[in-house]
Figure 1 (cartoon, rainbow, N blue to C red):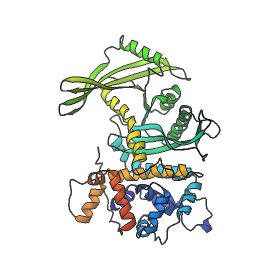
Figure 2: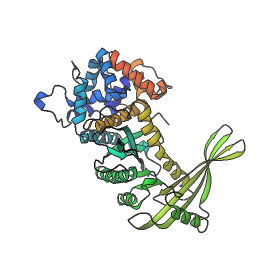
Figure 3: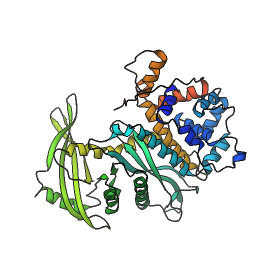
Figure 4: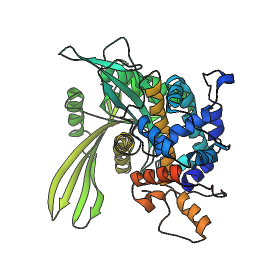
Length: 454
């Protein structure tokens, strides 16, 4: 709890005040529990690894110290907690734009701390991965979903979100913005819906962050002129997974023809990893400035980059996989490996992003509420909690707090992730200390925080 508290105070000192400023839909003279206690209860629920509101409610009933511990984060005394019904009612009816604003303010706070400077690529860009995630599916009609008809006449409803997350080699995957995919009048088709949502999402990011330099990472859905032109308009770079054999066979044929003729020298082999008697190489090849019509906006210049991963073990070569991308700028032998490594980081949004949020402590695939805006707001709460737990677990704040308390320098336990090994154990510790132990906030002094995870 000390590390969690210090993390919030260091990176987001105005967070509780921002919670208080949420545009509350309830009548002010009838509000007993303000928006900031609701928000902190929601965040603590996610950070503690609860899988449902019912589980949370049962645990709160037996808790002895949660009111005292929450008061430290709220900066005021907490005599009584709202019921779970009141808690759910708040998130079912508050407008999601209010939580979007909180995420935006958190991003601005990290920007003021110059946190993103350490996450930029060698050419000064932030890697922004775009991908969709489905959280819950049900046969019961619920609000703000898309639906799919089945051959047997059944209809299933899906909560679907399009995420823009900053990814990095240090392990951080931080939510920048979320676009809801909801289509109440037409049948759900992932590609159509996600593509339209991506246009809205990218345009909103451009309006909110006109000064930021992004490299947009996306899957094969984004290999089209509309998305490419948005990136070009805002001076962003892009790298999109290219599935030539299935989606663009003619373009792939032109790439191969060009590569074997005028650009046949555009290839190199580089070492990726070495461990014991096993080595991992990548055979890179690329083609620049091909003219091709790849969508409704007409012909344009196409740049292609491909990497074939080769494992060499005991002198025997084995092909592992081949990854292909369409990229915004020309490739050369000097930048091919760096660019390929950046392209591969798109998968972090699925692994460290969605998979973590589903299978670890945040449980975004569990139905916390499907009434009104409940599903959307509990999903956004998970994004806020994910940012906080990463900053607490993957920086050296824990080590600095430990040195304050013990007056000992511990060079081997500089982050919570190092101390406890997994975020699952961190969540268990948060739950235990939040509910059962008396928490005394540490003295927060000026800290120079360092990233401790690779």
